[in-house]
Length: 147
Length: 151
Image 1 (cartoon, rainbow over the protein chains, first blue to last red):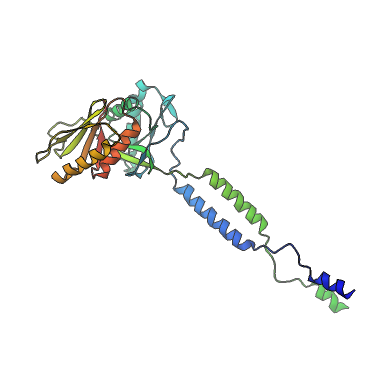
Image 2 (cartoon, rainbow over the protein chains, first blue to last red):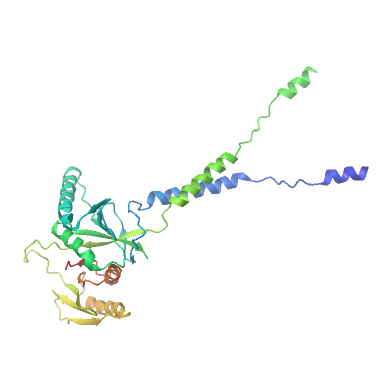
């Protein structure tokens, strides 16, 4: 009888106590890191599965500006599909808006962003470069992936 | 008997915070942020283009090099506005041509210290990736003003 009693009292519970406080700390650090990562990312570029950006070592920070995207479907100015023949007219309007904005707030547009696939021929890029030169856009930001 | 009742009613001052909902909330946050996070960082290769509207007298006479495609497999480097004598050099496109170009640009830079500009006159079939690679190589050699000529 006494032996049985001893055995019962010595049996340990299989449920160990979990220290949840350190887990919460680790989770909080992760959330803060990911929030900072999201806030600093240049997520204003429209991601497309058809566009694989070229890589470059000498890159600069991408500044928020108007985006020209070249896809299989054609040229997009922002979200809007643009006919190649209307590109100059659209860019003239965009330039005028940029100049008005500069007059009002004194902030110059950092340079139009070009987002294109690395396999694209210069022949397809050329009308855009020419249209930008015609409409007075001297600063261009070619979107690249950081090497 | 009365004393026993009062002892039973007294609540403990120590309390435990239920951490399970906090953990659940944080786990959902982490899952959402991991899915929406951008892992590939996008940068910009900045180019300052000449607009061609200004008269020749106003345009800068700073030394520069022109990287011109003269054939499907041939590129020519032309020094312009150099104060010292520099020759035109042609390169055949090969897997190693960018290395050769870089060493040639480094030589030109040692001849003309204030060389900082380059213009690229590409051919139609040049890929955008190769164009960026060329610009990157020129920037590596200290040419900060790189422009592209429309065809």
